[in-house]
Image (cartoon, rainbow, N blue to C red; front, side, top):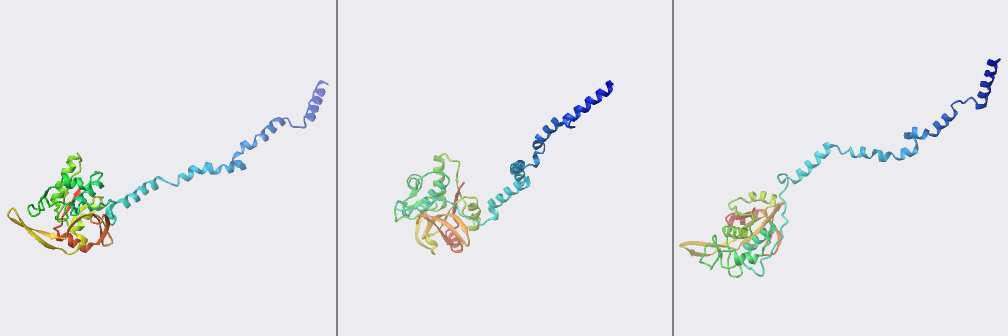
Amino acid sequence: MKTKKLFLFILSMLLYTGCHPLGKTGRDTVKDAPVETGGANEDDHRETPETQAPLQMETETPGDEEHQPEQRQQKQNPAEQKPGRIDLQPICQYPELPTGCEITSLAMVLNYNGISVDKCELADHYLDKGEVGTVDFRKAFEGDPRDDSSYGCYAPVIVNTANKYLEAARSELRAADISGCRLEELFPYIEAGVPVIIWGTLDCAEGYYSVTWNVDGTDISWYTPEHCRVLVGCEDGQVWTADPVYGDVRAYDIQVFESRYEDLGRQAVVIQ
């Protein structure tokens, strides 16, 4: 009898709960379903660009990073480029130094190297000068660059003037006489960013010996129209020079320019 009553009690309880003994737990599971399946819902899909951002960065692989500097290095390699043009600020010799093309060219190069100096300071205080006809223009300026009836000087004088000033300025830079180089041998200096003070003729005109002096028992002849300027570039069959007569940068045919350079004995000076 007791067993029958227990059976009827259990049966009545099952009918009361609707046959869902785990019903509460099931509702909790459904409620939490979006969290459990989060990768498949729309909100998660909209977040994909953020999760993929690191993958986009991975397209710049270490191999690519190594390749780019090589490309930049190739562009900067002077041996694989035409000689370029140095960005040098021209200085005009006029009106103060009508015959001072050499000293003005030196002033350009010194200023290019970060040494601020005025052309007149160099001419007045550092340039060796002598009365016309009494000095060798390879040792001193023939006359005075402030005088329009004077002549000029050659490379050794400019080297000496430059080094006197550099020493006084306590600079580690020094001028060097590289005379004797062929014109094409000067182009590596340009490629390296080193302007070259160079001798030739005004406007690359044909020259001639105009006057002869006897100095210390030796006859020396002046070549007219001697001119000094700064070589700053070479491209497309032309050379570019910063010209103190005009106070600008202008081009000349490379063959004509080379011929005039030869006429003046291949004189050239650099500061390094």
